Length: 160
Figure 1 (cartoon, rainbow, N blue to C red):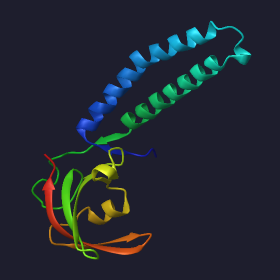
Figure 2 (figure 1 turned 60 degrees about the vertical axis):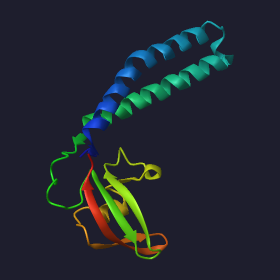
Figure 3 (figure 1 turned 135 degrees about the vertical axis):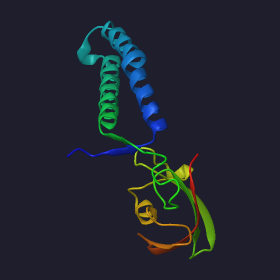
Protein backbone atom coordinates (compact mmCIF):
# COMPACT_ATOMS: atom_id res chain seq x y z
CA UNK A 1 0.00 0.00 0.00
CA UNK A 2 1.26 3.48 -0.84
CA UNK A 3 2.17 5.91 1.89
CA UNK A 4 -0.50 8.46 2.73
CA UNK A 5 0.54 12.08 3.08
CA UNK A 6 -1.44 14.08 5.64
CA UNK A 7 -1.61 17.68 4.46
CA UNK A 8 -3.73 20.75 5.06
CA UNK A 9 -5.90 22.23 2.34
CA UNK A 10 -3.49 25.21 2.18
CA UNK A 11 -0.54 22.86 1.53
CA UNK A 12 -2.60 21.02 -1.09
CA UNK A 13 -3.13 24.31 -2.92
CA UNK A 14 0.62 25.11 -2.71
CA UNK A 15 1.50 21.72 -4.21
CA UNK A 16 -1.08 22.08 -6.99
CA UNK A 17 0.31 25.54 -7.83
CA UNK A 18 3.88 24.21 -7.79
CA UNK A 19 2.93 21.34 -10.11
CA UNK A 20 1.23 23.74 -12.52
CA UNK A 21 4.33 25.98 -12.55
CA UNK A 22 6.67 23.02 -13.08
CA UNK A 23 4.63 21.58 -15.95
CA UNK A 24 4.13 24.87 -17.75
CA UNK A 25 6.62 27.65 -17.14
CA UNK A 26 9.58 25.70 -15.76
CA UNK A 27 9.34 22.89 -18.31
CA UNK A 28 9.48 25.42 -21.16
CA UNK A 29 12.49 27.15 -19.59
CA UNK A 30 14.38 23.86 -19.27
CA UNK A 31 13.46 22.83 -22.83
CA UNK A 32 14.77 26.17 -24.13
CA UNK A 33 17.99 25.77 -22.14
CA UNK A 34 18.41 22.27 -23.58
CA UNK A 35 17.78 23.52 -27.14
CA UNK A 36 20.33 26.30 -26.68
CA UNK A 37 22.92 23.87 -25.27
CA UNK A 38 22.41 21.51 -28.22
CA UNK A 39 23.28 24.33 -30.61
CA UNK A 40 26.81 24.55 -29.18
CA UNK A 41 27.90 21.53 -31.19
CA UNK A 42 29.47 18.19 -30.26
CA UNK A 43 27.31 16.75 -27.46
CA UNK A 44 30.04 14.42 -26.16
CA UNK A 45 32.13 17.36 -24.94
CA UNK A 46 29.33 19.84 -24.27
CA UNK A 47 29.11 20.67 -20.55
CA UNK A 48 26.16 23.01 -21.11
CA UNK A 49 24.22 20.11 -22.63
CA UNK A 50 25.11 17.84 -19.69
CA UNK A 51 23.98 20.55 -17.25
CA UNK A 52 20.71 21.06 -19.14
CA UNK A 53 20.01 17.30 -19.14
CA UNK A 54 20.67 17.16 -15.38
CA UNK A 55 18.32 20.10 -14.86
CA UNK A 56 15.67 18.32 -16.94
CA UNK A 57 16.09 15.14 -14.87
CA UNK A 58 15.68 17.12 -11.62
CA UNK A 59 12.57 18.81 -13.00
CA UNK A 60 10.92 15.53 -14.00
CA UNK A 61 11.92 13.99 -10.66
CA UNK A 62 10.23 16.83 -8.76
CA UNK A 63 7.14 16.61 -10.98
CA UNK A 64 6.87 12.88 -10.22
CA UNK A 65 7.37 13.52 -6.49
CA UNK A 66 4.64 16.20 -6.35
CA UNK A 67 2.25 14.06 -8.41
CA UNK A 68 2.83 11.14 -6.01
CA UNK A 69 2.14 13.33 -2.97
CA UNK A 70 -1.05 14.68 -4.56
CA UNK A 71 -2.20 11.20 -5.56
CA UNK A 72 -1.81 9.91 -1.99
CA UNK A 73 -2.77 13.06 -0.09
CA UNK A 74 -5.17 12.88 2.81
CA UNK A 75 -6.59 16.29 3.61
CA UNK A 76 -6.57 17.17 7.29
CA UNK A 77 -10.08 18.01 8.42
CA UNK A 78 -9.47 21.11 10.54
CA UNK A 79 -12.79 20.65 12.36
CA UNK A 80 -12.35 16.96 13.24
CA UNK A 81 -11.32 17.41 16.89
CA UNK A 82 -12.11 21.08 17.29
CA UNK A 83 -14.05 20.90 20.53
CA UNK A 84 -12.57 17.75 22.05
CA UNK A 85 -9.52 19.51 23.51
CA UNK A 86 -7.33 16.65 22.30
CA UNK A 87 -4.15 17.29 20.36
CA UNK A 88 -4.37 16.45 16.67
CA UNK A 89 -3.15 17.74 13.35
CA UNK A 90 -3.34 21.50 13.13
CA UNK A 91 -3.13 22.08 16.88
CA UNK A 92 -0.81 24.65 18.41
CA UNK A 93 0.63 23.14 21.57
CA UNK A 94 2.52 24.97 24.31
CA UNK A 95 4.59 22.64 26.49
CA UNK A 96 6.80 23.04 29.53
CA UNK A 97 10.06 21.09 29.35
CA UNK A 98 10.20 19.71 32.89
CA UNK A 99 13.97 19.08 32.72
CA UNK A 100 15.01 22.67 31.94
CA UNK A 101 11.84 24.53 33.04
CA UNK A 102 11.34 26.27 29.66
CA UNK A 103 8.20 26.60 27.57
CA UNK A 104 8.03 26.01 23.82
CA UNK A 105 5.20 26.30 21.32
CA UNK A 106 4.79 23.85 18.43
CA UNK A 107 2.25 23.24 15.68
CA UNK A 108 1.44 19.59 14.95
CA UNK A 109 1.35 19.06 11.16
CA UNK A 110 1.56 16.29 8.58
CA UNK A 111 4.97 15.05 7.44
CA UNK A 112 4.86 17.11 4.21
CA UNK A 113 4.50 20.36 6.16
CA UNK A 114 7.02 19.69 8.93
CA UNK A 115 9.62 22.39 9.52
CA UNK A 116 11.17 22.19 12.99
CA UNK A 117 12.99 25.50 12.51
CA UNK A 118 9.57 27.18 12.34
CA UNK A 119 8.04 25.11 15.14
CA UNK A 120 6.04 22.83 12.81
CA UNK A 121 6.45 19.27 14.09
CA UNK A 122 5.31 16.19 12.17
CA UNK A 123 2.77 13.90 13.74
CA UNK A 124 5.08 11.06 12.58
CA UNK A 125 8.00 12.32 14.70
CA UNK A 126 8.57 10.89 18.19
CA UNK A 127 7.46 14.19 19.75
CA UNK A 128 4.38 14.40 17.51
CA UNK A 129 3.37 10.79 18.17
CA UNK A 130 3.69 11.37 21.91
CA UNK A 131 1.50 14.50 21.76
CA UNK A 132 -1.35 13.32 19.51
CA UNK A 133 -4.44 12.43 21.50
CA UNK A 134 -3.27 14.06 24.72
CA UNK A 135 -5.02 16.98 26.44
CA UNK A 136 -4.06 20.11 28.33
CA UNK A 137 -2.46 19.27 31.70
CA UNK A 138 -1.11 15.85 30.62
CA UNK A 139 2.54 14.98 31.19
CA UNK A 140 4.20 13.31 28.22
CA UNK A 141 7.48 11.40 27.93
CA UNK A 142 9.35 11.43 24.63
CA UNK A 143 12.21 9.06 23.90
CA UNK A 144 15.14 10.95 22.36
CA UNK A 145 18.79 10.10 21.65
CA UNK A 146 19.77 11.91 24.88
CA UNK A 147 17.29 9.89 26.94
CA UNK A 148 13.70 10.39 28.06
CA UNK A 149 12.38 13.95 27.92
CA UNK A 150 9.37 15.00 29.98
CA UNK A 151 6.92 17.69 28.93
CA UNK A 152 3.78 19.07 30.56
CA UNK A 153 1.13 20.30 28.12
CA UNK A 154 0.22 23.85 29.13
CA UNK A 155 -2.24 24.76 26.37
CA UNK A 156 -3.81 23.34 23.22
CA UNK A 157 -5.38 25.53 20.53
CA UNK A 158 -6.71 24.78 17.09
CA UNK A 159 -4.72 26.61 14.43
CA UNK A 160 -6.82 29.32 12.85
